[in-house]
Length: 191
Image 1 (tube, one colour):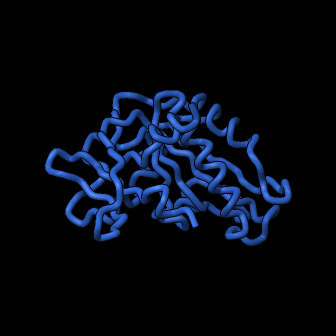
Image 2 (tube, rainbow, N blue to C red):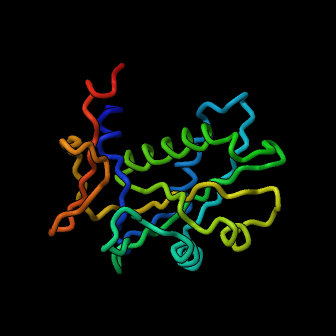
């Protein structure tokens, strides 16, 4: 069952804007993430839930998506996420936000797997204006935004394919806007 969730958990960049994700759903996603492992059990992460239209609009303006796709603007008009979870490191607990990277990864993946279980999807976004996000949404200097997770009802098709002869792992889209994600074969990653 976990493998099924992992296979459905793609980096979605297109969402049904008519489906509004509630703050309650976001709370449920974070509630599962808070139960996961944390380095030295420090638990330095905080989460800002953004489900209101104004906040989502501000967050949309701070994000940059799919930088490998040079000729495509994502999300397409009318396909933006309807919620975000902003993962923040509390530097009062962990002085160096980079030392919380493992915690951030564990929490983000847990959030997205829980979203898939609820028939939602999302995308981890590291490419956003962190300084402006802090000024716009956070009220404490010790809160440092490190990752945004877009959440919504996915509307795009994503297919996993094997890495080709050229060895490229760059994702791409075809003329029907299907998104392809090359994955290395198991025998190519085992040492």
